[in-house]
Amino acid sequence: MSETTNRSLAGNQVLVTGGCGSIGSKIVSKLLETEAETVRVLDTDEEALFALKQEHTDNRLRFLLGDIRDRNRLKMAIEDIDVVFHAAALKHVELNEYNPFETVQTNVQGTQNLIRAALEESVDSFVAVSTDKASNPASVMGATKLLSERLVTAANTYKGERNTSFACVRFGNVLGSSGSVIPVFMEQIEDGGPVTVTDPEMTRFIMPTEKAVELVFRAQERMRGGEVFVLKMPGIRVGTLADAMIAEYAPRAGYEPGEIEREIIGARPGERTHEKLISEDELQYARELEEMYVIFPQIDLPSYRQEDYEKEPPVDEEYTSENSNLLGESEIVELIEEMDTIATIGT
Image (cartoon, rainbow, N blue to C red):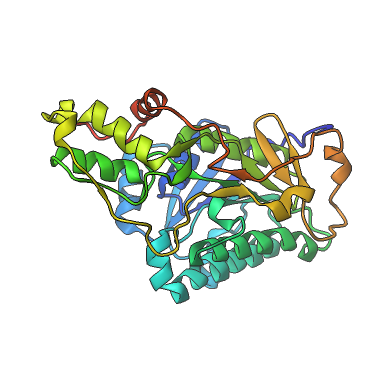
């Protein structure tokens, strides 16, 4: 890319939706390392808001109880805001398969509500956190997140003379996040097994939360508006993950690795064998940057300058967890050991 926009957060008022979640709370922590003037945290979870307040004593923080489904609440929450990080979503694949009405109301309607509020307030930048499941989706959650991405992209056509820029960041599983298999495996190992594996050959993207959030901020700095930034992530085989965790953590829990059984339970509703961050249909719009890929908007945006990326190499094949850099057992354990939320087996 020829240049970046170099957006600074210094002096800005920032809103983080879903600010108590795995990603949102890390975004909040990272914002407190900047010179942002105010950080508003919006979440529906009263207990989690209280816990976050206990964790941080920074007087720039504002804790807002509210739902992105509620347009009136959003109108108050976003008043005088300069930057929005949108991390609020329903994201558990299987639960969303059985509750699609709720998923649509939060992931689609909620995102639309937030976009409307951002336009009314003329915020400077709006970054939505998306997922690998939005690429060629095979689940309710993935389909709603793809539509959420398209809403964010198209918001750039609704802004008129406003200077607001809207973009998305798409990545895969984050270590230790809510619903992640790693805390589940930890608990099962501590209980003596069995470790329940959907499919040993299933692959997933994986990344430490801190790294994912760092790249979210990079995307916010360089976005023009309309892009989907795709973070580069290593992958794992679920069977390798289970083997690595049993070998490392069974002894800490007082068991021999051979005493911990693996139980194959099969894929759950909405799950696919391999995840995608860039699908074949998106290749013609994709370019590779140093730490991430960028997918151009697939609609004409008057303010968007594709020439900014003309010198960047094209992406030649689908970016899937199967063809990613698959980690070995020792590399997996090393990543887990770096987690802030790691279960303290044997301590």
